[in-house]
Amino acid sequence: VREHHRKLRKEAKKRGNKKPRKDPGVPNSAPFKEALLREAELRKQRLEELKQQQKLERQKEQEKKRKLETNPGVKPSNVGPVEEEFAQHNSKKKTKSGKQNIKKLYCQELKKVIEASDVVLEVLDARDPLGCRCPQVEAIVQSGQKKLVLVLNKSDLVPKENLESWLNYLKKELPTVVFRASTNLKDKGKISKVKKKAAPFKNEVCFGKESLWKLLGGLQETYGKAIRVGVIGFPNVGKSSIINSLKQERICNVGVSMGLTRSMQVVPLDKQITIIDSPGFIVSPLNSSTALALRSPASIEVVKPVEAASAILSQADARQIVLKYTVPDYKNSLEFFTMLAQRRGLHQKGGSPNVEGAAKLLWSEWTGASLGYYCHPPTSWTPSPHFNESIVADMKGGFNLEELEKNNAHCMQAIRGPRLANSILFHSSGLTNGIIEEKDIPEELPKQKERKQLEDDEVVDSDQESIDGENVDEKSSDMSPAEETWEALPEESTAGEQSVGSFTLDKTTEEDDAYDFSTDYV
Image: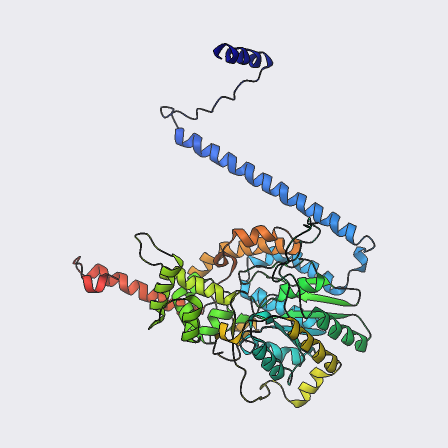
């Protein structure tokens, strides 16, 4: 055996197949070792950045080729005024974003979408439809002589009885469409291999698409020209998912985290209907704490996770919460988060339960699209203060409401919602006020501006990626909801927090170093 191995080594040596020698690295006795290692690390980082840049350029070229292949007859001269304005806006995006507040940019984008649209779809979360309506935006749409249609998305997360009662309540005021968006769509331009015996996913089938198509098609026929449809709503209600479902491919950037859409995006559905995606509404800080926690895409670290989750928990039925999360009865929210952390195995260093981790978990479930809860509509119907009977009649004009009612009934029969006993009853806080005018946005403190300067640069880069339709899956998986979102707190609250913190620091320095177990230990 020894001779055989020696013979093999000798033959391998003749062929030149030698083992690669291991890099010994920089010896400890070498002078300037730290400087050499730092230079090597910087060189490696530059190479990685260069590779990433080349990869992005290749992806952009491939995307341009795909667009030319899919639409060979389309020329740049055929682009409409909305697309031209959108292209000009994107070219100036990088220069403007560093100087302007991101919230002001959101207001500008939302106004552009409303002005460019003939019909506006306001997307509502079926679990809390009244809390997803913004009276300020609806008043602007009405004053601009635009048609307004309500879309009840996430209809599969509420019981059928509750969905039917909400539909009867909302259709008295505005045309309402029952919808369930499909979240399992292939990316644009990519061909996925179809398995022969692949089981369908839960959200593979889209409901309400035909009724919405017929509603928009009927309005286009009455207008006698091509129409533009704007999609608006609060963050995380499913605006981009609805557009992807109508187009039957993943064109708009979607994900679990809030505030992924940061600029208007024009998507042609066919020759006569063009749909425009928009960023979410900016929630006014004067709303209740529950509305701020559910509708604002502020990062949960800034909102203080325990306070935000406690506000949501206070509005939910305690008995059904106990059954849903399988925890014992609790006296307050802190006790619930402690038990939930123990139940889910969320522990800090040393074995103590991670209360903040449990609060973030609850917050992400209630703002996501998996938890089923419902709200009761008001007992008596009263028209909204920004609408009157003549405005309601104008809004309903031009639509085939009888056909819409039949299609909605068919969709409700097809959608399999949860049972009433398995859902959590939630007490809605009513209409949510939004900020439309840029002057109403509170100015940030200097420290906040410094902290958000880097975030704004990341926002610009992500805008460009979402426009080009690239890196959708990588972005949704690599970045956490806290990194994806922007802060939406008034400056008074942050200023108050800073003053309290400085007071406690001064107090501790003045006092002696004695340790008081009753006050210092938590």
